[in-house]
Length: 179
Image (cartoon, rainbow, N blue to C red; front, side, top):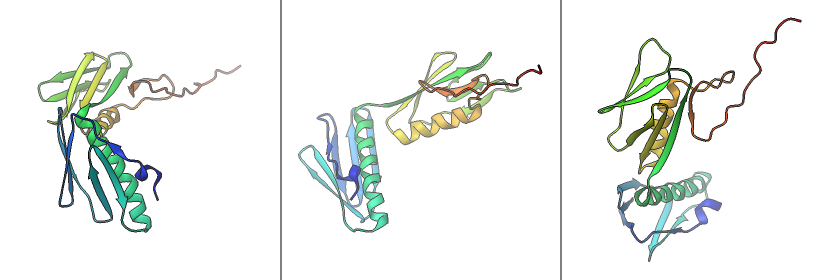
């Protein structure tokens, strides 16, 4: 049995969770999230406590047990609080700009890169080199942050590129001169 799957989920007072046929719906002050699940697991809901139970003892069922518990916990956390990722542009001339429904990245290429902003995410530029991505779906926030970072990942010699807040880049030594 999955260690993560065995843990119970406590539901905050400002969140309501409902179960329908093969679907779980979480409603909170920040929005509504829903996710479907298979018959490999069962979800039991009692008075502000939710428990995910394993129906079969197969490898796939055990893996799905822990996964669904983690996804449901992220849904409940997302509708009560929001998930946030902060990206930092490190390098001369590197900057972020929000232009209506698109994110403009100036990352040292000959042209600016434009990415459309998904409707369910909020993007803020705290400064030209700091970008804050927030939303209720942890998966969508992380995916969009990785798409932005993919434009210019940090390089190990000078540390230039787009990095997550708090991330450390392991530096490599450059060329050594002849003696």
